[in-house]
Length: 640
Image (tube, rainbow, N blue to C red; front, side, top):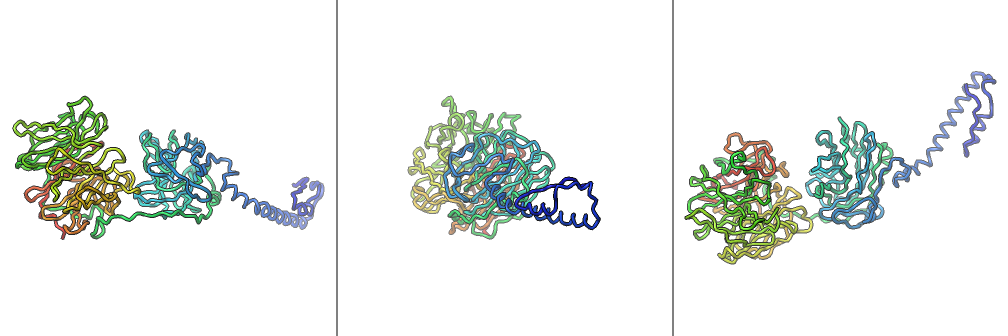
């Protein structure tokens, strides 16, 4: 029974006065028809009250949500309109540019925004995030928008990113990464509101005002001390997966926001940034590059093992940087070798010789172990057979890859020992492929600079004086980031083309010289997919150009299969692609494994065959490699 109702809710109190007075309904029996009329009137009054109470606050609520007000579990907000935003540190460099309403932070080069302290998660593991992003440079690699990970400490929770596909994706750690894609490819220069909502058993990926994908969670997301970072990951000082663009209005909530609230945070933005997407050099001029399984495998090639991985016998784990050279009818192979870790003081430059084309080999012998000075280390490099002498130019350093330089050696064939001629190129230069003779009488030795941004470089000799080299550092375009410029060249009269390794993308980099390597165009991206590893290019005796790397439509940064691209002698690009060998190679010889990396190729031609040396890590990591070789008849290297 109802008793004593009295309502006075201005400005609608007139409704209540019509319906209710101070009355004891228990003492006042009502006929049925009056009771029904009362219930109908009450229902009408409640409907009107509800509509009037919701109409005005709805607009206020939308405004409050946009500003972060009125949401009890707003954990943190960063407006990104100042370089001194409290609680947010810039690792690297950032500049202020136009944002969605005021200013925003444009991240430069390798830069990350890092929260001052880890944001505590609610006990229920629920979380919501909203931020605005403006992509400036698609890279083909993962670009983190927001994340809570420190990989090297095994702290993995979640990542919101622009994935390799160019689509906005969400990764959540569920005893391994699980991901969903929005299928949205952000257009450079345009603003997008991105975010996610973590619920008890699902994760929603948001772009603008819509849920674009949902992921079922089968376990609790790990709770780690990793800080939340924006625009990349700070992996204990290593900044990577960096975003190339601007970030604005970041909000983190300690609750699973409703659909209505997440939608209300979004509002249309017509501001844009003027972004110029650099054109790519056309290095591939053939039909569309095929996927790994569809690329034709070379016929009539054979394989050899130069040095097996056998630390239980010789104590050496690290092996890398195979170099090959024919000298007086014998085949020489060298590599960097280390009983400790890569690029440390115990590294040695070592070699062995074959008198039967690589079927059998002499014992492994050391060229130089860096005994001249206490903290000198010597590693892999290149060979050159010239005027009856066998030269070796080896990358060397002090301590742990510090003060990198190139040292020269010649072989005393009577004793089998190498004579050390000391440093011939300084300033960080490490040679990568054998010197090539140019028409002007000089030699050009391709490599790169360790340090100073790691650009590609070449050393140019003073004629046939192989003890005198002039270093030429190749300039890099500002949009080419994260490069590790290990390089190779092909020579055509006065024109030289340098192909170098990218670090940030699985693409070949290109530069050109028209004056025998004295000056160079800026390094730029190409349309040629290539793994992030050292390439090897050159010109065969029949004039055909080649580029050995790992290239396929679906390969990305994977270092397999080992491929060779061929190009017309009169052109500047490549049009034919073959597989030298796949990671799985059960017929042997050599190691076979699904995850094998076939890396750092090096080639030399001899008596109608191209000899290609490479590293193979089999099932291992950290360049614990065996050294192997493919022998390819020139007759099968056809452009047809």
